[in-house]
Image (cartoon, rainbow, N blue to C red):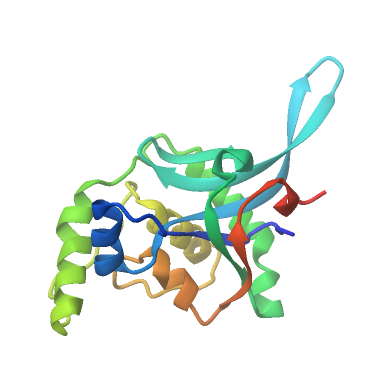
Length: 191
């Protein structure tokens, strides 16, 4: 069962050429997003009626957004959760930072970082050389950056800040522990 602040990492299991190239380059993981929990939405101000919707926080081609968890049903994922009690006390701050970042109109998807940082990082790592480029953060973010950013803003050093994080960085993070792996479906939602 998912809990607020769980990090979901999509497993790249497809057999097409592009998926195989991505697996060779960045490993078996292709996307990362954060589960916010069931967020209350006001449906009618006059009646004060609330509905609770399970939402995720992610960056995709549209930029940093909040989306329904159900849009990801059917994906093969690894669910990672903060291990330590001290880090788990920061969950409200992490969720607040996610809402703030998703509300930022400047938080676009960053296509340039793929060219300037990820491809060189992958090539240098495959050759066993440290990448010479210094990673610089800005308001534009890809999926792993936006998830890492909300943890960093809340004071949790989930992954190193000096290189652009990849989805696999979250699976390899010492602060997160795997709690479940499988196909995301309705049963994974909290009640």
